[in-house]
Structures are given as C-alpha cells and as structure tokens.
Image (cartoon, rainbow, N blue to C red; front, side, top):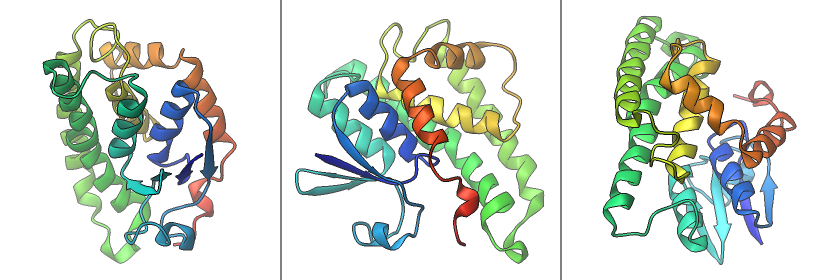
Amino acid sequence: MLTLIGSPQSRAFRAVWLLEELQVPYKLVDVFPLDPKVFEVNPSGKIPVLQAQGQTISDSLAICTYLADKHNKFTFPAGSPERAVQDSFSLLAANDMEAPLWVRHKHVDILPEKLRVPDIIPSCERDFLQELKTFETRLGNNTHVMGDTFTIADIMAMFVLSWAKAVGLDLGTGKALNYMKNLKQRPAYQKATQIRRQSRPFSEMKR
C-alpha cells in the first residue's frame, strides 16, 4: 500500500486529491514539516513524501507525476506535445505562481519576528497577480488547463489559487474563480477537502 506522509493542510493536499481521483488505497500519515517521522524518510524534513514500491518520493509535483504516469490517468503520455504543455502549466503553478505566495507566507507566519520584512509583502502580492494574469490568458475559455481534459496540472493550479484566495488576494470575478468553481464540483476534490478539514491545523505546529 502507498504511504503518503504529510499534513493535508500542506502541499500534500495535492497528492491526497489525486489519490482520491485514482481511487487507490493509501495510508495517510498526518504530520507537519520537520516532524521526526518526516526526517526518517526525507533529510530535508519537508512534506509531502510518498513511499511506493520501496522508493521514497518527495515534492508534490513529482508525486503527482509518478502516480498519474503509473496509473495512466489524468496526464498526457510522456514525450507528447500535449504532455509538454501540461508540464508547463504545472510548473507555472508550482514555480511562478506559488513562489511569491511562499515568500509572503514566510514573512507573515513562519520566520522569527526579527527576520520578517513586512515591506516585501506588497511585492509578493504584485508578483503573484502578474502570474495570475499569465495563467488566465493561457487558460482562455477552457474548463481545464488542457481544454476539456482534467489533468494533474489542474491539481497544481487549484492548490495555489485556493491558497491565494485564502490569504485574501483579489482574484477578480473572472476566469480564475469560474475555473475554481468548476473544479470544486469534483467528488474527489470534495473528499480531499473533507480529509483536510479533519486534519490538525498548522496552528498546532511547534516552531
């Protein structure tokens, strides 16, 4: 059985959602970053981590790519032009869109008070909103980033858009919100959201 290590409050949510889409059995170990259980399998202490067939896989995008490829679902074939476009959307979400949110998060919630730089927050929000425009332009009028086909790129994008909305960034009233509304109707997303709600909040994490 697959073992997913990491709190569903984190990027591990992406893997939980995909596992629910795939309807494969898995064990979820609900732990925060830097937990001793995480260090046992990942020297960085970061989550999520997936244990599968004797291998340890870290990083939510790597985990989702592995699972989608293994089950031949929610992805285009490796080596196809469609797969390259899919991957570019995944990386847009995981890198360009998520990076400013992560820097903002560190300076609002994570770093010791003396290391926080409040003046950087407006810049982070500006950078995210610029990347949001890129995302919406590329999305066009499509239901999913790959047209009518749901892929792991949608999982990557939905997570970062939800994060931005949760911290109060203005996503407007257009494409991004309609895109999110559609994805929220998926039963597997709703199940993953329920699992997340039942998990421990990050406020319980010892820093």
